[in-house]
Image 1 (tube, rainbow, N blue to C red):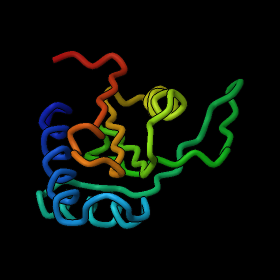
Image 2 (cartoon, helix red, strand yellow):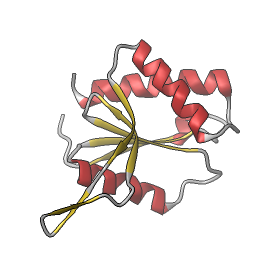
Image 3 (cartoon, one colour):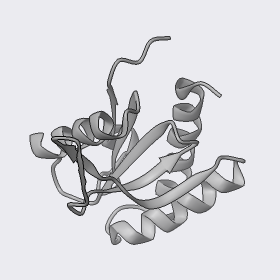
Length: 127
């Protein structure tokens, strides 16, 4: 399945979760609900995946974790903040570079309308 098709299913699942739960919960609650929806849609989902950093040919475990890794292709970084900051965007781009993935979604569930909380980031993705 192409990253764009996976992205569509993730956005639909995020919408369903947001409609059911609304804003204001902990990030872990949205992660659990979104994981459930994505698996119900038939996607392979990994949670809290350790992401090592390579520095001078040495692998360093510095505590980076992907919130969700879908089909080994799409990184999802979840937030429950009042405002997404530039550092949140840069965090996802860093995760894409370190993992070698081409597409990531930054999803902030603490919004009135979930479509305003979903940001797509690419790292060399072509259609």
